[in-house]
Image (cartoon, rainbow, N blue to C red; front, side, top):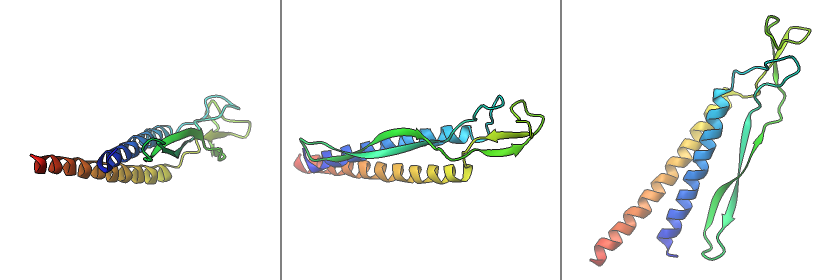
Length: 136
């Protein structure tokens, strides 16, 4: 495998991984204000994503893949809302453990990483095109 193919493969894996990260972040943001629906029930629990390095033994190319999508075990916040159907005997309702500020930071980081990988992909594609032009 030539160097340009390696660059394309690495960049593509980075874009796929960051795309999955953006999906997880968007799901978290969409459910950030959710509450429990019944007493004793838990609201939406924030999802987390983990990446791992994958090495192709034939080519030696090191790429990134999603290792797992898990759950954040942080405690739920309590909000005083005695009229809510899921309120406990003291009037508190469990709310999601999603922090919109943290999710926005994760979204921005994932978008920038995606963009960096896309720029590398485009650069490799242009280099390949220039090589082909020079060989004509």
